[in-house]
Image (tube, rainbow, N blue to C red; front, side):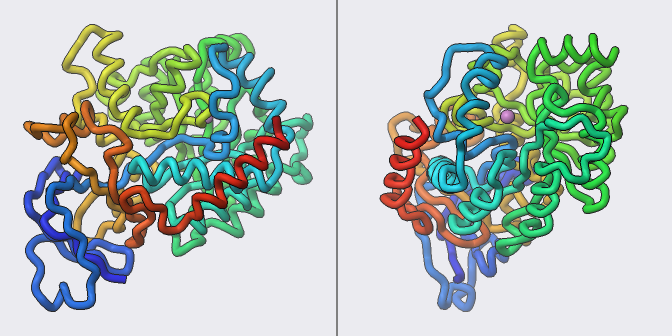
Length: 430
Ligand code: NI
């Protein structure tokens, strides 16, 4: 299918360029021309009138557990250790493939309706999660979260590690390349050094990237110092984890030295402001990390610690909280926050043809309806996106050149089937 967006105003995220009244030609899943198009290009293409709309690259959710939509508003107002060990893990034990499938579709609906076109996820029952990604048309990097139960040192029969390997072999590069895989040791407090070594050895064999939670709470930080005599970042660095391309979620308690390690090893840290605020984990030193050259992406985390998957809310928070806690209004400007949700997410995935509107880039595109009272007048597009736009202002979402969401309508997902499925899962689980 060929598409032409007519008369769009575009925030390209390519050197901050803003294009006015621009036509965008999409063919074979890629942006193949920008500017005023000739009649030959318009022939046979579906024309989308984008006047009055703002176009930007689709948002990249840098850390998520999408099936946790099932646990939305289930356990709130408690600390991370209680939340995770006393409430979340016991329900997760009971989850079945069907729960994951419907929970994922529900989360994907929420994401595409609020402008997210790609997400980086770690969870369980990954075949069902990948099936939801494949059917819905969204893009994702997926990994089976691993928590070790045995003592090792031989983990060759470890169920989770073997599931990870099987999943990677089956799904990495699937769905026209929309799905990629990763290896995910859950965290340093749920994985022993021997287990991390075993995971790493396999990840190296397949050239797979790593997705891990890192230094999320003060408890994790202090326990690690006590147990290993080093910070969680130093611990993973010494184990050799950062030799693989790594996305480290949270990094709330990282030190100046840790930031240097992350920058030197090109580790992406994912900032999850809502989740860190809600669980009172603290506020990650994002301004310093950016200053020292760390690639910082942005994420929602799971819907149970947020409690939604709305990336515009994360952009807004990322642009606000560092100003507040540091009493410095110059920290994390609107453009920096938008970069975290687009180009920096693409860097996390090692894709320079994502998170940007340019010729040759993947056609992962969103349109925002600017004809709203809370968005007028548009003095500054970048400010509007960071400070005024709501996720619900997104009116069209395209991934890989296909329209997934158009004015409230889901093109690839049967809304009623998902509602019915979710109700059924909810009744069995709770
Ligand atoms: Ni997480």
